[in-house]
Amino acid sequence: MEELLKKISSYNLFNYLFPGILFSVFVDNYTKYTLRHDDIFTSLFIFYFVGLVISRFGSLFIEPAFIKLRLIQYAGYKEFLSAEKEDKKIGVLLEQNNVYRTICSMLVLMFIVIGYEKLSIWLEISIISTKHMFGIVLLVMFVFSYRKQTRYIKSRIERNKK
Image (cartoon, rainbow, N blue to C red; front, side, top):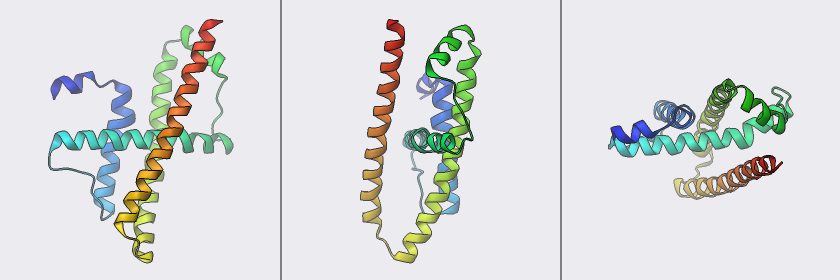
């Protein structure tokens, strides 16, 4: 267990595990749902996966919404790659930036979960239909995450060819 924790990068810790734990605590305390497991090892994997989902939600929905609302503005990707070679602190700043986006995403999802819980009680939606819907949402979200990540990899490869 200790060896596994040593291998987790600071990015994974602050963008996946930390938000996953926080989200799970919020869910446990503010809804009828629970994400914790009796086994701490299983709980850590659940927290990590929940954090991964939160991070992907932020990348796919929060970031584009903030760009559209003009709350944030990015430099061009070519400029970013050039600057990253010259200024090593950009990588640290990018990691912190992603943490903030993930926290925003976590809070939005928390409100969605609380709202969904209230709506499901009011509409008497069964938990079975919820699990199916959640699975479909995860599938779609990870397909688009995979697509987005593949684009980043391709653009970096093309940039390195030049």
